[in-house]
Every structure is written in C-alpha cells, then in structure tokens.
Amino acid sequence: MQSEHTTAYWLPKVKIIDTEYDSKKEFCIGIAEGKITHLREYNPSITIPINYKKIDCENAFVSVGWCDMRALVTEPGMEHRETLNTASKAASLGGFTQVAILPNTEPVIESKENIYFLEQENKKMNSKVEFLAIAALTHKAEGQEMTQMYDLHKAGAVAFSDGLKNISHTGVLLRALQYAQAFDGLVMQLPSDKNLANGQMHEGITSTKLGLKGLPSIAEEMMIQRDLEILRYTGGKIHFSTISTARSVELIRKAKQEGLQVTCDIAAYQISFLDEDLAKDLFIFDTFLKVFPPFRTQNDREAILKGLKDNTIDVIVSNHNPHDEETKKLEFDLAEFGIINFQTAFAAIRKQTEHVLSVEKLVEKFTTNPRKLLKLEQPQIKEGQKVNLTVFYPNQEWEFRKEANASKSKNSPFFELKNNLKGKVIITFS
Image (cartoon, rainbow, N blue to C red; front, side, top):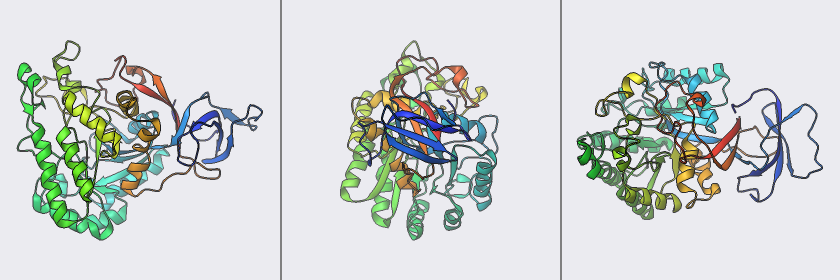
C-alpha cells in the first residue's frame, strides 16, 4: 500500500519498535495533518475519532521511517532507467521515508545547483520520500580532482563519495579525509581495487566452472587495508559501503577495536544468494544475479551474519541500481552490474537474519544508525511530533510479483521467487 497524504488515519493495535516503548505492549496511533495526534496504549474500549480512517494493520509493528544510505536514482540524465517519481513510489512501498542517492547522475552531483535541483524536486513531488544528496568527492566522479566539499556540505550534501566508483588515488583520499574533518564530514568509499576487480562474478570454483573471469576478494580487502592505513595517518572518519567478504568484516572489526572512526554497510541482498547459485539451473548465467560486489561464498555469508550481530556492520542499504533491458538482458560478461531493491531490501535481509538478529536490532540498522552517520534528525514517535513512520509485518512471507513493481526498471532476481522474502511493509507516513 502506498503512502497517503491528506486523510486522517488510525492504526488500531500495533507494537512500537523504539527504545522508549515496550515492544510487547500494543498501542493505538492517530495521524492527521502530518503529525501524530494520538498515541495510546491499546484498550478494546478505545473508539476511533470521527473522520479517521482505520488502517487494516492489527498486530503490525511500527518504527520510525526507514532511511536508505545508498541508492542510485538516474534522474537527471537517464530517466529511462528511473525517475525520482518512480523511485519515490518504490522506496515508499519498501518502507523508506528518506533515501540518500549516489552522485552518479548526468550531470554528476557536484555543485550547489545539483543539490538545489534535488531539493526543488522534493518539494515539487510532495513525496513521502525525502531524497538526500551524496555529493561527488571528485570532479565528475573521476577520482582525480576534489570537489568543493565545504560548499557542498553547506548546500546540504549529507556525505561525499564517488558512488559507483572508488577513490583509488591515495593522495585524493588522504586530502579528503583531512579536509572533511573541518566540518565533520563523512567520506564514503566503495572498497575495490579497480586494477584487480575487472571480472564478472566472485573468483572461485564456480567462476572457473562457468568460464567467467572472477572478481577476487583480495581486490576489496586490499583497498580496505590501504584506506585504514590512511585513516590512521589522517584521522577523520570513513564509511565502507557494500562490503562483501569475511576478511573485510574482520579488518573493520579490528579497526573499530583499535578506536578508528570507521563504519560500514552491506547491501540488503548480499547474502540472499551465493556465487554457486549462478551454476544452478534456475539461475545459470542469469544477469539479474550480476551485482557489485558479487555474491560470494557461504563462509563470507557466515562472517557477514556475525558482523551484523556484533555491530561490526552498522547499516543495511538497498544499493538500488536500476537498469533497462538493453543493458541487462545481454550475455553475462556484457551485462551491467546491479539490481533494483527498494521494495525487497528489508524482506531480503530479514529472511537471512531472522535467527541471528531481533527485529529491533535489524530495524536499528535501517533507522537510527544511518541517520546518525549522516547527521540527520532522528524522528520521534510521540504525540504532537511530525509523523515519520513505517508500518510492517516482520514475519510475513511474500513473493515479489512483477505487476507490483513500482520501479521503472525490472532488473530484480526476486521476481516470483518463493521463500526468499520475509517482512512485508504495509504503509509509510511522513
């Protein structure tokens, strides 16, 4: 169900996922004119206020709206793949009320005008999803010349990254980490040595069997090691986005124990599949399983689960990356990397972590943690406060049907796939 705008709503009997509330108790929540008008502990005798529309969500869970820290939305420049409007619809259906978008648009987000465009589009659409700008760290995201980071920060950029590209130039990264400290800015890095990472899937037995050039784990791990050494020298803080290997998790865990200001995230779909799935009949050479970083091994999956549990991994992102048929329905080695994932992000990771993470801990990685890193205001679930809520059933299994897809692109491996999604969003309010 899509987010609504004007009507007054009544959530009749829900559990609140928030540190200030007992998650075992049930509450009634009233919403009108963009605010929480009522918040009462549930009692069968409570009557719904006049003109409030009752939402069919008894026994659902409610949390503050989810925040996506990494997504590609291809407007301006590539509207045939995704627009802000279609992305807003898909993100809202997936439970997100805020989305930080990568700078890899055309033109690249690297000026105050680019950020202003995004702000104006937010107002024009009157959307339930607020899009936030991750500004390019270097000119045209080419990795050579730094952008005007302070001006971009003042204009509203929430972080700095070259998005789909990594910062391979050590001098540029060093200067960026030094410069960002003046305004407590966050540098986000896609950890991958491009001189080593020029394959198609995880390098291993399966890539050899399929005759596909591999993407070795060491390409990610060496970049993390290098960047941590630079961080030790410069100070500041760095965020590694979409890590995927066991060694990466361990390197970041040790760096945190050392006291370095390092954080990281994983793509929500990262442990939904393994590299070996590409050799199975259902998915053999399926380009919808071609993602970056690639799906890796069972050992990597187990390490990621451990990293989520002990908070080495701070945040879970959608890593939404839309592609049209012309760039995806090709031979595997010619197809682009990436899948759409707004509507399936929470359900994909919930399915894989249900025996490892509580709903409360999982939701924290979609709400409190990303907002803390991006220095965003933390919404509050209290009477009189501006509404920013996600309503969901954490244990409902479902299938992602093609007709339910709100994204403009259709590159998802989850379509019609059974037993891979758990946790269904009902509605968002913001």
